[in-house]
Length: 110
Image 1: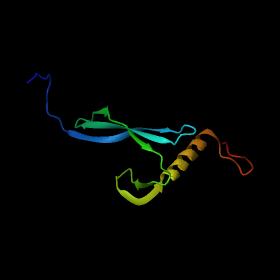
Image 2: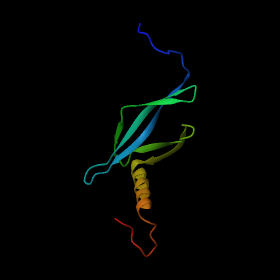
Image 3: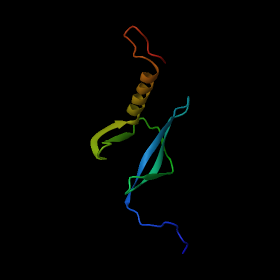
Image 4: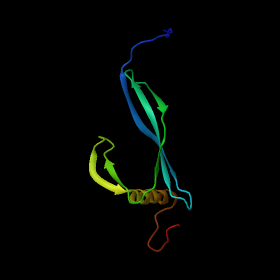
């Protein structure tokens, strides 16, 4: 066995979380979403360490239903939305970020 300096037992928790979401929306190509994950190891003293994990890529299927999960509890709410509805929501968020709301007389940017 190899000597380990300051070796001691630890207590804490470990979990996986999504750290970044990348939407690849190239013109003329079906969109994809890449979910970057990390493993978080929280120690009893309040410190934590993170390790990147293998990303997960999801191809766009406009009709695929996504169950809505409560982010606070992890429980299924019973509601669903399609990937097309998620796409529309993200598109709308983009427009809200780059342009002020249009009045009824103005045209939305394309």
